[in-house]
Length: 435
Image (tube, rainbow, N blue to C red; front, side, top):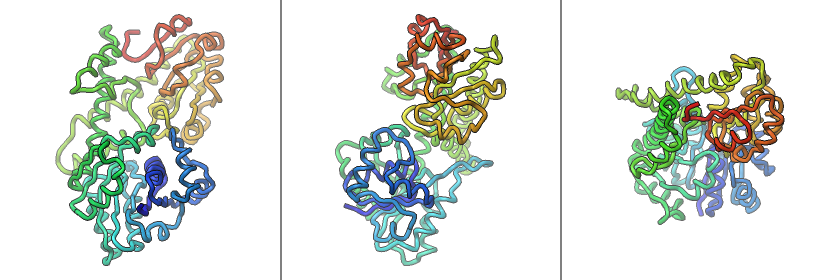
């Protein structure tokens, strides 16, 4: 058993803390937000992740998982300190803003007690580990520590599943001592996950390179969907045929309104900026970023086009989170599409099973909010699906056809069966099929 301090209790820090506690470690999570820590100590989860609540309650009750605002008590005596604070994009340069990482490194440095591995879980640009090392050494010249890059690969909505079923564990360090500590921490996954020990700068690059590649894959299938709409091909059939090629694979071939969330937009922008910094322009990534932004504008206008006969008509939006399984609305395509629609319509009612509260803090009073899908669709001239919640696959289409003003659905996630929707009397638009 190891004592692990995790700095940050967001979508990376909290699931990681829960997972490491379940593996038998003593985990202390630190955050500066006192209200957040108070809620966690009262047993209230501060974010939604499928499957996390039961493990959270179990490990808090067992004393394996605790929460504090006191950095000193968390870090002193810790074998491993994990940095899991935010690295948001700079509002102007779009580079990763490292002020929270550097501030945390400076604060924890004075409390290091005995040999400690400081592991960076946050996604940080290449060379950040060197900076953290220098900050700690400057604050505490006598500290016995190593800085390791430990990139996270947790998908929001599937973070608990991914923690316990990792396809790879990447450890970036040149220190044999630090490597042994980290391998011991993740020993429960030995034999069922690929372990990759690399240079720290290689590890820092792996997460960015992976996310940028996946973003480009999403953009590519969206371009193919546009082609299919013009040519008469069906993107579902095309994507299935592509995915059967083992060199391409089936994942990330679902067309939609564009990628979003807390990782892909931030990481593609940061990767593009790093390319410029190091003198290696990344043209594919830069094009993907620009075209993904354009796509969300086009999707918003597509919905507006669907109600051109009733320009004052009600638009029902189903889905606000950037994807199903999470309440996270950061960089959500749904939010961006709604903002585009607001330019043309002020009669928009929205619903999401988990993300309503987070969406309200972004959209405020620019839209109306419904408590369920039926309420959102009542009297609507078009219903648009923007997030792939499983609930939306089983919509009572017969009921919706009766309560809507016009039986129209714009399915920007291709969740529904075109045949079933049309049989229920709807005019149906989806992605990648000729209208």
